[in-house]
Image (tube, rainbow over all chains, first blue to last red; front, side, top):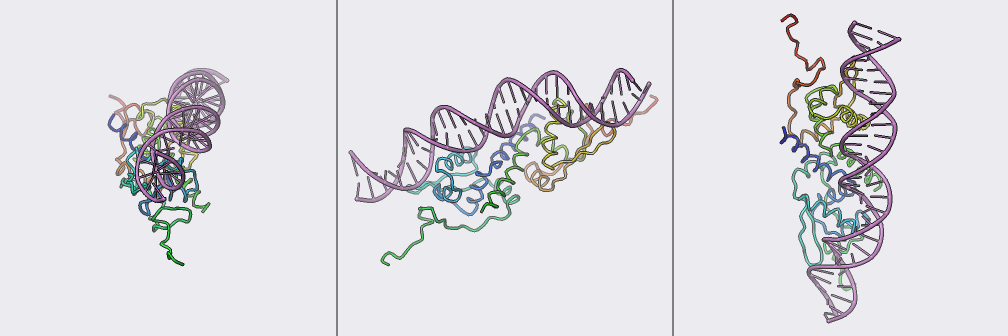
Length: 115
Length: 115
DNA sequence: ACGCTATATGCAGTTCACTGCATATAGTAT
DNA sequence: ATACTATATGCAGTGAACTGCATATAGCGT
C-alpha cells in the first residue's frame, strides 16, 4: 500500500508543476517547438528572471531540457506524459510563431540587408 | 490574449485540485464508484475531519457531488475532464471494493443473522 | 427528549510556493 | 580586456495551502 501512496505523491508532483498559469503558458508555448528565454519573456510579458525561475522548476523536474546555442538557451519539452496532459487540457498544440519583441535568431525576420 | 491567460488560469486551477496526494487518493477511490466519508476515512487512514476538508475542496470546485442517504453521505465524481486526467495518470479505474474498517451499509457484509 | 453516529465547519499554527529585486555567470563582439 | 547581451541564481517578503484540533450539525434509534 505504501507504494500506492507514493504513486499518488508522484502523480501529485506532476500536477503541481502544471498547477500554475505561467508554467502552463510556458509549456503551451514550448509545445509549438523549442524556444529561447527571450521568446518566452516576450510572450508572457514577464521579467526575464521570472521566466528563468519557472524554467528552473520545470528543468529540475525533468519536464524540459535546455540546449545552449551561443548566447541563447533553447528549451524544449521532453516529458511525454506532460505533453499528453497538455493536449488533454488545452487541446492540440498550435503551430510555431515568431514573436515581435524577441531578438533571438528564430524570431528576427531575415530582412533585406540593403534596403 | 486575456481570454487565453484565463484559460491557463482555469486549467491551472484544475491541476491544483489534483496536485495533492490525499485528494488524488480520494478521487482514485471514488472512480471505483460512489463512496461515503467513512469509507474514504478507512482507506486513507486519516481523521474524518481531514477527509471532509478535502471533500469540501473538491465539492466547491464541482468535481464531486454529495448525496445523502440516512446518516451517510455518498460522494461521486461528476467532472469528466478530471476522470480523463485520472485515467491518463493513474491508469484505468479499479473495481469497487468493500473496506474492513468502514461501517457503512455498502461495506458491511450481510452476515448470517442467527449464527 | 436523549444519546449515538456520521459528517461538516471554524480556527490557528506552520510550511511552502510565488514573486520581485539584486546580482552573478557566461558567451559574443570590438 | 572591456563592454554588452542573454540567462541564471540568491534572497527575502508575502500569501496561500496544508494540517490538526475543537466544535457544530444532522439523522437515527431508544
